[in-house]
Image 1 (tube, rainbow, N blue to C red):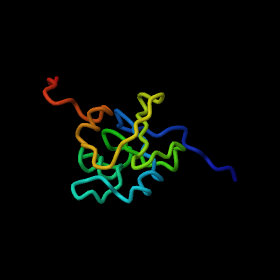
Image 2: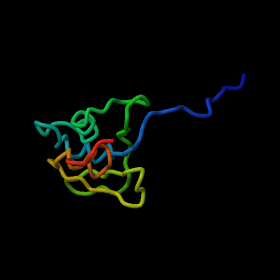
Image 3: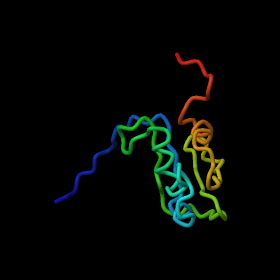
Length: 111
C-alpha cells in the first residue's frame, strides 16, 4: 500500500524565524524575565506568539545550524536567509522581535 503525502499545509505565518537549538542548549537558558528560558520559547512568550501553523508568525527551534558562536544563539530570519544573527544572552526580546519583523516598530502607524 502506497502512503499518501499531503502536498501542502496552509499556515497563517507572516514571518518565519529559525533558532538554533544546540546554541540554546549550550547557553542553558539566558533569556526571558528570569534568564532561564531558551531563546525560541522566550521570544514566543514575549511577543505573544503561539506554536504551530495557526500562529501569526513562526519561531522554530532547529537542530544545529553549524555556526556555534560563544555565549550566543544563531538565528535565521527566513526573509533574509543570507544574514544570520548571533543573539547574546539577555538581549532585549522586543528589539529582537522588531529587527526580525515579528512586531511593528514602536510609533509605527497601524493601518
